[in-house]
Length: 274
Image 1 (cartoon, helix red, strand yellow):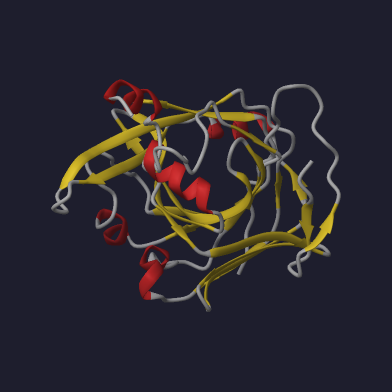
Image 2: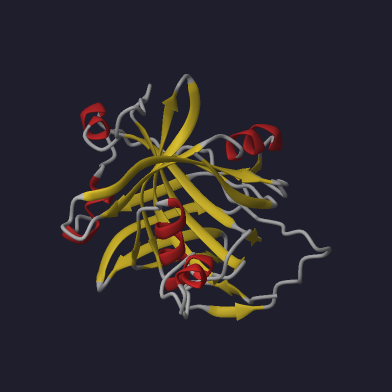
């Protein structure tokens, strides 16, 4: 194979059988459960890289269902996102994400620098409760629950929050283990159409594990919040699959999305729990 041919084809590994296709990427019917909690300021200072800063020691723990993603398929992810500020603009820094599907792990790490690892997250509706779990191997790492669609939220602020900058620390090592690429990536969601957002009472519990130490940014207070939303989105970088019902994994049909553009469902919560 000629060098010119290698350069032309080299967007992902392996060269002759890439783990994911080239973009653009669209995500249809995304669903989120996001529980917001306060932690110790020192804990965030130890993990947020310069030049990012933060005002309040707040963490958002996310459970995300991704049933229809271009080239990546159907999967679930879970992890922590921290509200930050960069050059005076509010955004979010992704600290850690855990997924149950290979291609979005490989693509997320290689293309954008998402800090993704393989695990077993779930997000489902169990009767009147939205339930998210994260298992790493045979160990339960996190559990979060929320009352299902208790109060509708104003979609304007939810959409504005989704369109804020998102920051990633992309690390590509050299063969000796030293960082060959070490950069702060700013990525945005585009073409976002919010379909719904709800709040309700929330409950969470984290567990210690060596392999998922990021989750050990512990809750400092007993108050949490959660929010529910829905949107059409496409990710960009600057600088019908069946749904699952109940945690047993029973498949229920989901209507196919209409039109040629994707619609991403997001679930963001905002409520109190004790």
